[in-house]
Amino acid sequence: MDNFGEEFEGNDISALVRRFEQLVYEGKNEYFDSDELCDIIDFYFQLLHTEMANKAIEIAEERYPFDPEIQIRKIRILSYENKTREALDLLNRLEQTNPNFPEIYLERGHIYSQMALLEQAIENYKKALPLWDYKDEIYYYIGSVFFQMGKWDDASFYYKKVLKLNPDFEEAINPFTEAMVQLHKYDECINTLNNILDERPFTFSAWICLAQVYILKEDYDKALDALKYADAIDPGNAEVIYHKADCYLNLQMPEKAIETLDELEANTEQKGAEPTLHLLYGEAYEDLGDFQKALVHYNKAIQSDQNCDEAWVGIGAVLTELGRHFEAKHYFSKAVGIDPYDAQHWYLFAQCLNHCGQVEESIQSYIRSLELSPDFIDAWVELLLILIQNDYIEDAETYLVQAIKHFPEEAPFYYMYAGLLFSLNQTSQALNFLDKAIEINPDQYEYLFMVNPSLMNLENVLSRIRKP
Image (cartoon, rainbow, N blue to C red; front, side, top):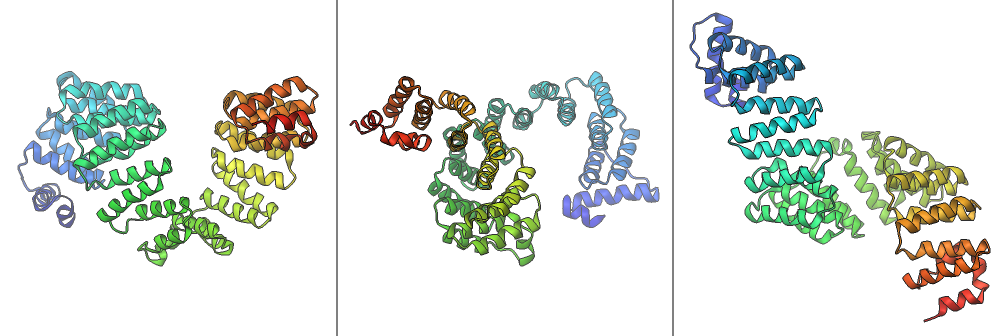
């Protein structure tokens, strides 16, 4: 026990715990003030040694029955032991005698948050706010509840208050960034992170988050600059290396990605247990066209994590490149089973099913992809082509109307609708849509002929397209 004391709290707590254990196990008469007993309770609770923590509370309550700090520690342990009702009852009694004790409202807020009673949690945190000196902590708790609720505006507002009040509060940086990403406020997020870094240039999490936002903006060179600073703060950090490799892959520099991954200082056992490493290796070798090595690494990723959906997709993509569509279908099917909410997975599965001649199943997969990501323009185009080419004319017209409504400034859909209307002998309306398409983008007329190749022989169509 003494060794644990020195590891966690130093010699002072070690001596304190030794005296306490002499009291418990030897019956030796020892005096402890209330603060010392609180430190002892905290020590045991930190080690999750709840039996001794409860023993310390029992002794503390005998000696200091009305001390609110001791009662708060009892409430924390009751909550940890899932004795929620007892914890809340004790909080209510404590509030009656100590209504201005801020930790009452903090602990109640924590309990309500764990119970998913989120409005009540926020209410209690706000009650604690004027009573508690560490405002940044309470702002963080409130922000975290809004984050849990998916209220990204409110979450980012409170996280920003935390970071303005205390730039050293690193725990707020990641969720703040995530909330801003959800709001697509990339530039504002970058400005906030840069302000933090101006004051605290060695804040590792801020550099990492800055890189992640630049990656989302597809500004990979700036992301690499941010990662360079993160690497200087924590050399060899796996997260930094993974992000660097991802940037190089997006910059179409797979050799550099492989070189970066080779820098990862990890033993063979750790590498074998790390799916992300093999996933990135797989993507790099796939980009290089070395499909055999890509398959080896994707399979290693799956061996270390059967639920690594990206690795299943990776194998499916490689097999597709090799023209082995029926084999690929199994891997895409596995991926959408693992993560049924990824639009890209459904899109690739739809393509594969179409190659396998399973048109109905392909259409349904495209539709599922669009349900998850309505802005997925490639999925719209491919779905419409399949519907038209397989004579699902009524469905095609329905989805064309939806596509034009969703993308009023995208010429391909007007060209496609014009081609469809020509095939239905609705020439006047077709020409109207063709003129609109040409007005938006005169260079995308190939979509017209994809839908209706016979129009290449129609002079009044060709004359419009050739018109300067």
